[in-house]
Length: 271
Image (cartoon, rainbow, N blue to C red; front, side):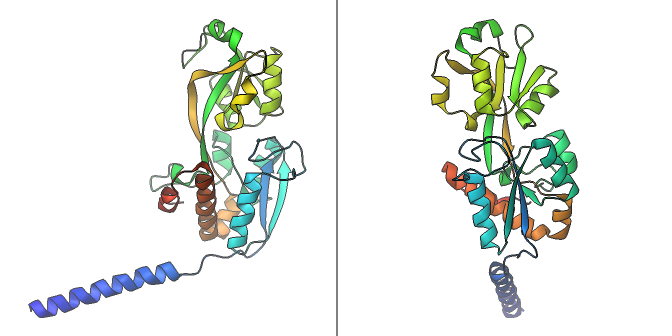
C-alpha cells in the first residue's frame, strides 16, 4: 500500500510540474487588430513632452514603453494625443483601446477598465508608477496659507492641469480651482500669483523648476499618493482580456525598471 501511495504521489508531482511547464511555454496572446493608443495632449515632462496633438521628438517614455510592449505582442500601434475630455470619451466609447499614464478618478472608473484584484479593488501592483500629489506654493506665501495636511488657514484658490486626477482631487475637496494647460504653465502662473497653490504629481516637478525667483516649494504633507495605470476601453477588455493583462504587466515592468524598482509585483498583479 505504501509503495502504491508513493507511486501515485510521484505521478501527481510530475503532472503538476508538467502543467507548470506547459503554462510557462504557452504562447503570449497576440493582437488581432492594430492597438489604438490614446495619450493626453498635456505636457507630462519626460513621460510625454510637448503640448497639443502632435508627438514630440523624441516622444517620451510612455510612447517608448507602449511601442516596445506592443511589438513584443505582435501589435501594430496607432497613437493619438487628445484633450482630456475627448480622451475620456474615446476610451469609454471604444474609439481608443488603451490609455497610458492615467490615474483613477470617479469619472474615469465609471467609463474605463482598470486592473482589479480579487476583491474588485484597483490593483496597485500593476501601476506604471506612483506619485505624491503635492501642493506647490510661493515660498513667501507658505506661512499665510497655513496648510496642515487637511485644510488651509483661509480659503485658497488651487490651480491644476485641466482634466487631471490631481485637479479632480482638489475639486472633490470643495476647493475653488483654476484649470491650466499644463503643470509647467501652472508653475509660471503660480509665480505670477494667479492662484494660491498648484496641485500636481511630484514626478512632473523637477527640483530645479522651483529655484527661480520667486522661489516655490512643496507643502507637506502630500495630499495623497496616486498610482498611474494604462486603463483600457470596456470593448477592448471584453474582446481580448488576456492581451490586456499581458500589456498591463509589460507596461508595469517598464515603469518599475525606469524607477529602479523590483518588477516582481507586476507579475503578481491579478489584472
